Length: 199
Image (cartoon, rainbow, N blue to C red; front, top):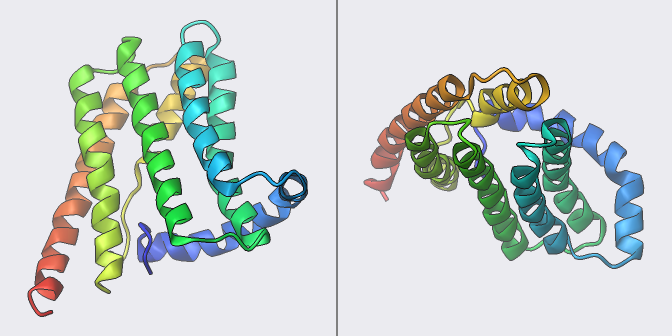
């Protein structure tokens, strides 16, 4: 269980991954035939994140559509790696780096364009990786969190509302995400203290 999922999220992801595998199958076949590296697919979401930021002020709906494509790439890289027998521990780590860079870059871009409070953006940039690291460590030490409300359940709907409809509730959504992640970190650290001190 060396991943950054809660027990509940892992259960929900299993059927979602089956659906995604079926949807991605034609694209995976093309990428495999072209010998595209899964790591290149992972890194493409970082590049798309920068494009999303550039398009936010003038083409917000196109920016959101590209954001969704970047999220799809996050699932496509793993599907490609599995289909081509190129699953590696480094690939999984590199994917995590790319996910985090994309996520924090988008949040920074929102602050840069004045859509999000810069303090909240900075706090999110610290809390988001710490949250995922805590989940990873809890799973690694066999003390998984039963559930944790991931930021995508809170921030992504607000991002959609902002880029698609021009309704800005980003400050409230990001602040709530930070609080929920901080709570999960506190619970995770409490669980880790109990198991780490025993080992």
